[in-house]
Image (cartoon, rainbow, N blue to C red; front, top):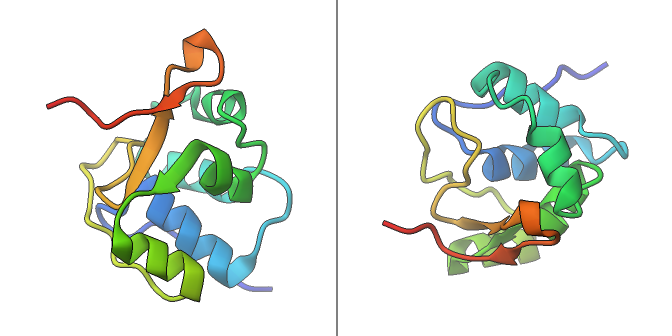
Length: 118
């Protein structure tokens, strides 16, 4: 059996999911989401519930519904199924790097895609 992928230093959740899903595929669970949380942001205990509220009921749906690419590099990587170099995030965060945009507004149902404020 293949070993479970581990997040690289300062790799964001979206880049990790993209890398893990491109090599291992989705099994219909949050296997890689929870592995990322446990290894990188163990205090983010509501991450799975938050992703489900945003339409991410499994790892592949997190990338399809809750997080979307916003850079040309990320778009091309998704279209051509090639590697994507993560821009990096601080340890302990579940926010995506500059290649991705996460939906906001979970508490109001559904959320919207909005850039982070400065």
